[in-house]
Length: 114
Image (cartoon, rainbow, N blue to C red; front, side, top):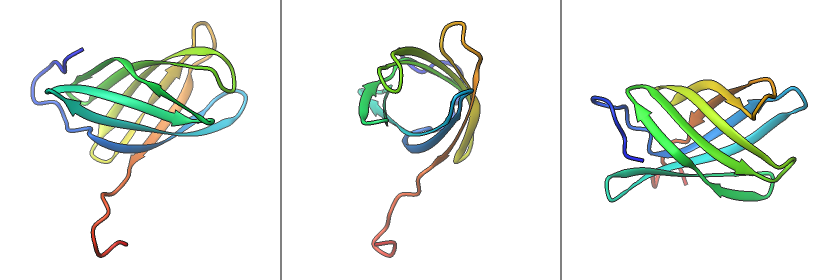
């Protein structure tokens, strides 16, 4: 789905995410890129990699859905607010309570960082 809204913030890059679920703290990463002008994404965590669907950036509000199989088979919906190199919001799986989500964009490595 194309980005909508006016002057959306750039979100491209790799983000280190933390989800605080009722069961556990989960670390994951999300990568956002543009392909033919359309925002696309992939999430990695718990030994699996999944494509993000229904990805929409509207101003500073970013939403997406993803299906996971670990630690449980769930369909997750994310609603986050992007503020520069940080994001925060919630993730929800059906009727389960919402989980807090926070994230930090990884800095691009330069020759000096290596």
